Image (cartoon, rainbow, N blue to C red; front, side, top):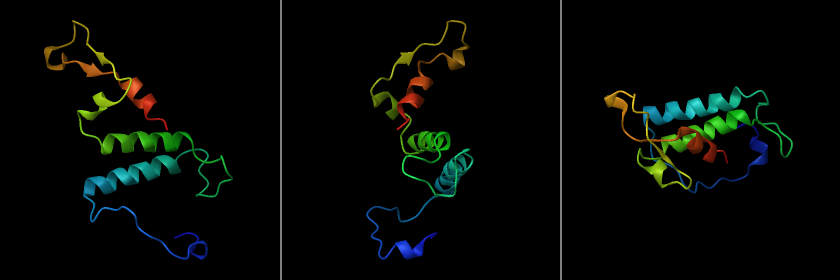
Length: 107
């Protein structure tokens, strides 16, 4: 903990009993995205300041990691997009428009 003098007691409200190696890896990628942001200052920020692009990327990754493959279609604003006729048959399934999904994730 960086500032133990600021915390007297902690109550864990929700936590997992254990993490898989993949979950630990995703968490590290999220941390690295935030720390690579040009505004990263090791957690020392004034109100309204802090990493912006890195935080957006970390949030986007978190949205991907805790949703099932079918769930993005349940989000508001999802549009199914058919691929062009020239698309190879192995890729000719309908797909979700990625740009609207990632823009919707920007909290």
